[in-house]
Image (cartoon, rainbow, N blue to C red; front, top):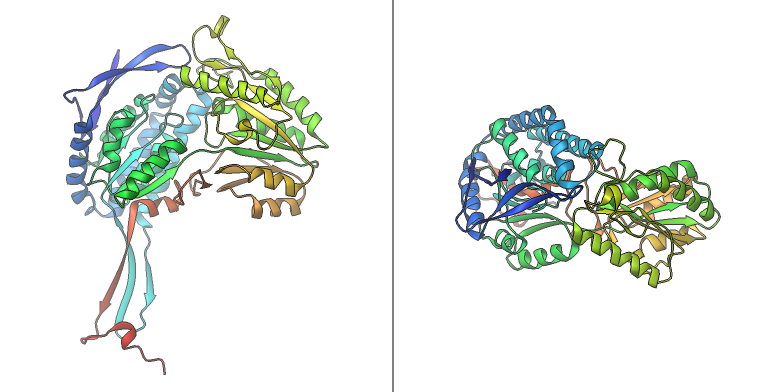
Length: 494
């Protein structure tokens, strides 16, 4: 039985008072490893190591920091299949999705390594003679990362890699359900040659993680997870004047117009609604369909759902794996019951799969509701499972209004051949990500990722915008006039 321990100051360490937690394969309910769960002292030890290491790391030229990130990207590439197999075992997602997630981390390593030679500042003319003005990026210090189980290596790479190339040290608290991916990434970080203490991983429970949020030597917290937890982190961090970056929930919709390519729309909806068993913040959980094509789209979706193979993610034919745990099954079941009480019509699924090949594991049948009201709870609240709601509309304006009526603002999509409708949707949909003739998933790492309203608080993961979370702007003035110049007081434009 593999046992995972904390990675602090370049070593795997034990802490007094820790206890072990099983790591469960959601496809089989088998215990595949144990992880040592630490205490507040574990976090203190990691932060101390990070603080000490960061002082020297910040002095390493950014292109040389980037060289280590390039090396890490190469190691991720070399170990891609091993990482993907492990990811599927502890997370449950189908193996092709796991490979895609690891590829995302590889891409992020190489992309952010490139930023080691592009941590651009600005130069600008001064308003005074014989004076030079510029701005530069500087690291913030120690960065606290808190990441979820549904994308255990991709989201970590979105946060850790820009933080590292910018000259920060990292203390990472991964999700309790997926510590094996964190352990493997720690191994590769060590192999790449990052200095001890620059990258640290602690396995602690949610209540203990508050110590990381409130630690006086951690000025930045970057969090991905539920809106409820994110709100608490924002409150705690804000009280201490910390910078807090939040990427939280979504209630994403695909709009299907009456002129849409229904074959393409159906294929995309099945993928973005039931891929990862709906356990994505960008998953499609609402389809807003024009009344003229509603019946035909329902027929096509039902036919597609029947062909989806549900099962263990290591089976290459499986398209819908298990959900993460029994608690998720209970939550999804409760929302199906809510939808039926609200009057929505259940067309497919709606139940736990628990017999025959599903006697072990956490499987839920791909579920489809129709005739859902826009203000119904199943159309407003994040379910985080393979449950899709169809909502009819009669005009593009109505569809946009329904899309924008939820608390979240992460991802949206429109299927249409009308270029005018496309540009209206691009302008009027209130989400941070908009897709045209594609589903609500599939963000690329060189564009900013995040959303508005209850989805986020204005920061972004991924893209060069991620550097804004992990750097401070410093304005620098060099006066070579040899005399005191008092800025606006001494400026004379007359």
